[in-house]
Image (cartoon, rainbow over all chains, first blue to last red; front, side, top):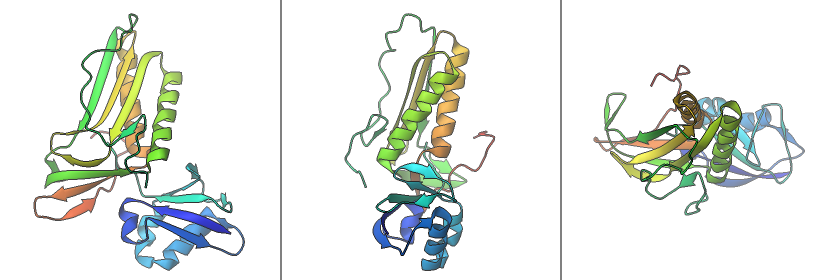
Length: 80
Length: 147
């Protein structure tokens, strides 16, 4: 399956702001987090405390990512 | 991402204060909160901030928070807008305004909106310091909101 992964704020120090990823079969949110941590171990701590959105809806770790989804990895919010 | 795109609750334009109250005869209390760029954070002197957001999602989340707020309190008015981009000291980053028949609902609803916006909405700020360094804000980790 293919997804578009968006990275924001401090995560852009570790990943491109926008990248296309391809996987064999489906992946859960927690599997994606592990994959990204392996891709760049320096980002592990930030990934752990980040939320994931799938097509702009906040996802749970157990949620499956659907083919063609726009997935975003969101560090803790700091607006205001 | 969606830069230069205008949303109802997310803007790259300078935020000004409203010059008049919403024309609502039943509104007896109106609360305006403005979040302003200050000169010191965690003991470090700040020169300016840069805000970024997942704009489309942030806009929808703020709309949802306002919708939740209107279910919790009997309000005549509830609005929130957050600015993105480079903001200098003293500039307004976010405005929340609420109006109700009585002040209590307007105050409580206003606090509820800003607390949820700060904690949940995908908006981030980078702080730039006088020594030339910069750092992404860690976000709010104080669940008591006493800050």
